[in-house]
Image (cartoon, rainbow, N blue to C red; front, side, top):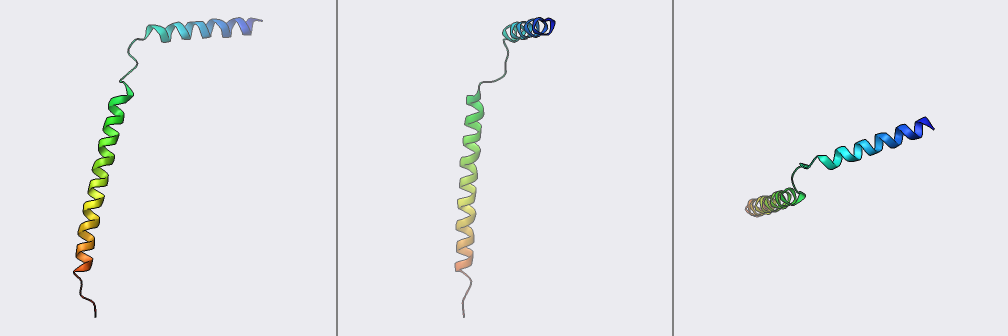
Length: 63
């Protein structure tokens, strides 16, 4: 019975502590926008490298 009382008190104390802390960090939206921007930049760089590589390979003469 003492264990249940201890667990109950610990849970109530932790929940009240969590409610007091108003600053929980940034919203996930700015992080998602940054990730989307990095993905777009990565796709752009990959496409540019593929275009340059293809042009270079096409410039190699064949026998």
